[in-house]
Length: 154
Image (cartoon, rainbow, N blue to C red; front, side, top):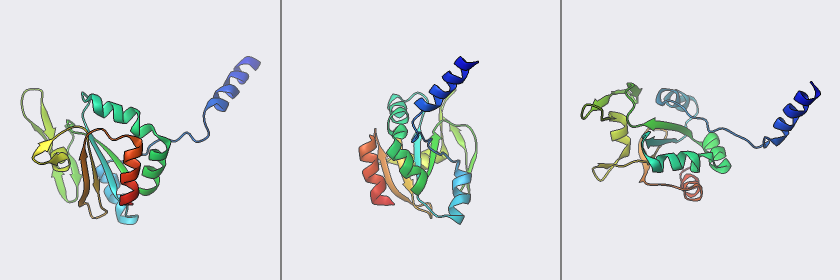
């Protein structure tokens, strides 16, 4: 029993006190929260098969500074571009549009990730509190570059 208590104490001691999780919202939640407390919305458009997307998820969005800024000053939404669930946002209903037997793209991903007539993953899109697009970027963003972008926008 003493060993178990000792192990549990070591476990809690080993967890950094600054350990934080990135809060992620649905579009519906962000829209409702934005009515009470307006903040920009950061949308990370990705797919499950995109290696660069996974790199951002496992590095950029795990950075403690990024987590702090996003949780404090923004609403963060992670959008799988191949999600088949309908999304109601900004008085519109967005649906998955099949493009073949096992492929397709969600209409909202198309709306938020299209730059120069192309949808490329990952795309980071930032919306103002009125849901207008103020920033879009295709590509890997490291924590340092994303912090600079977020600081300019907030």
